[in-house]
Length: 94
Image (cartoon, rainbow, N blue to C red; front, top):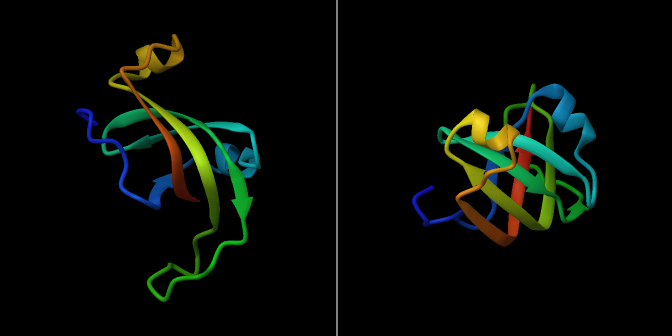
């Protein structure tokens, strides 16, 4: 992420297993713009549909998340992170 972090309310694609595990205060792993992510989820809130949403896609919304970024999958697997963002709101989808 080169230190710029997330904009407010970013969308992150997860695989089905990670998406189903995504609940308040749980941890999930994802990928965003070529960067590997470890996400400590904050509070899940009811997702408010957007007219641009794909009706075949499932969504969840979380407030107050902590996201740590790794440049490679190997670093992420070893818990090596180069950057951390806190209090981020995210939309997860699969």
